[in-house]
Length: 427
Image 1 (cartoon, rainbow, N blue to C red):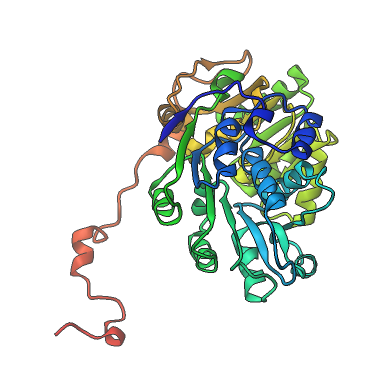
Image 2 (spheres, helix red, strand yellow; image 1 turned 135 degrees about the vertical axis):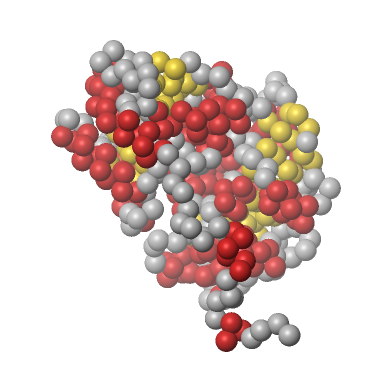
């Protein structure tokens, strides 16, 4: 994959039409980011693109702006029917709405020539079906809701000229493999395909080999390392919440995004912080879509100061000038660590990521460091110092438990197959 370097080109030099240029100027987009400088000309030239790009790199504009230009300039003989011209697939509801809003923003000087629709689960499908009755120039959707629309004959995908897979690795890791295969089967063979992914596990590589035709390939260096200051603070597990409250009060951050590992932890931590005089909202998959939208909007506009979230907020959620991200619990995946801290320090702004680790986290955080090529200094806060040794009760929990006698692999092989009378026996 080609290593992309920063370019000094202006947006005008990339061949963008005046209405889009004017909008970018209004949004204070001064010069293209590396992903934009490389991708925009490639898309305008009709090439397939495979890009390794982190969140916060400006990739939404990298595909949205040139695709809008293509759609405006292309001649369409027939505008009747529920046809979709450009399909953008994303892994989460919030990202679907965010990407659709970006398309609408960039298209604001195109005099309403293009119809842009977002479709995702968690809300009634009826309103979305109504919006798509006459088709759409751009449909931004999650795979599950897109299949609902297809099964109801609410849309037709046989005229899609451009397909974007945004956050492809996340889509596959969330279990959308089968849904994605069904969607791809409904698309025409001849189309322009753009695939963006932060990581490239085997399933993503298999997908790119199947989908893309002679793509231009780029790997964009993240600037997160230089713009985000990462702190790691050790603390005994029982003191974690107290330390978190202490840090929030001491630093008086205007906003803080706190990541935890489970939905229940969100609620419990919010209650504990409330007892310490800190008001916090929660954001996780069990909340209704309307509630999730209200909480996210409140955090974006500054009405909510502290938000506790699961990894549902780790990808694609863009909060301007978020001062700090705090890892109260570690993520399972080393890649998710980078996506979490990438909520701060976006678009070259300075950011801060604080990770709280207890004895049982030490090994896993070492793995996160190794995978992300990091080596971070461990800090201690006066009054919250971690013990030198793991507490005895944790040590006891960490001891491996012997398996019951007769449950080993050799013993299991000697047992008769379950339900043999139903499945028959080998002759």
